[in-house]
Image 1: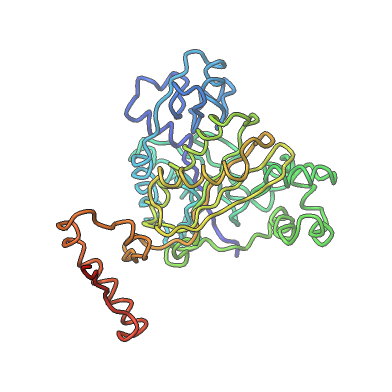
Image 2: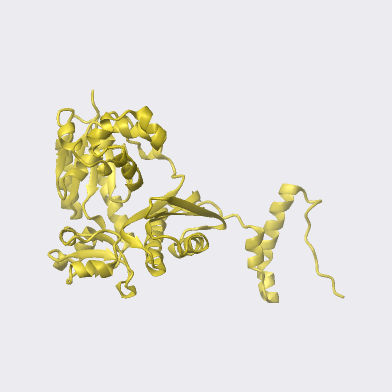
Length: 398
């Protein structure tokens, strides 16, 4: 028997949450963005009215205002978005323990165990989110995760799309291949060069031949296009802690100026920090990714002595990596930041010798206060290497 999978996407999430506190702006083009006074601030999210003006995510606010002179720009409030994301997921978990978030505004639900139809459950959840949170959602209903996700993308906003074994070819196979799940710009360009322009073309492709060009990812792309995605919707317990947390953003225009690139890194750093806070994690490796206009993707990373949690620290490390390796290069179309070597914020922060030296006191009173830190480190080293090898030193008067 086929599974019943829902994919729920909260429409224009950031902008919609902002409008809950500003109902007077509902009939105006609204975007959530950075500091407009910097000229290079970018669009993080937009409402449907702004979208109708042709405004795109990640383009500069300067360009967005040229398209819509009466545009309203609101600053982001990531803590508020996190609150609404958690409230929505709490509703979802009343219907299934198998709820797998896909970013702050999307989630898959496996409701196969319930007697109601997937469409009926989608309608009920959709009504509850609107009634309890004041937000609209689009829901895709299908027998697998890929088609459920594409169903929620098919009709927006505030809609339900049922993808069945009888209609999936008519609805999905006609779509451009770059709209297929996990087909990025670089992969789409390669596929189009091979004459694979639609999802149906991808489904008809020979995965073995395609894997010689795209690698092993080709197999899952072809099978998923055929409706053979059997990946499970993971419960919270099955998901476990994330191994990395990252955000990347493709821009609608070439990025050439340092100010615009730094602004985008600033916005990405804020979102990464928010996602880390949601997961209760900190990380010890910062990795950046850049993709130029020739679809060449490069990454650089650095390991840190002290784990990062704050957006300002993430931005500092990411920007130093960019300036060291990529500044002054070809125009860019994608930037990303990923934090690796994650650990729980509840875990004790292990003090390194560098940390201790950085806290070297400058006065006698400060030195006395610092003694517990020295003693704690000394005890740890003695336990590790033996007390006969590690002992406290004393300054001798001369």
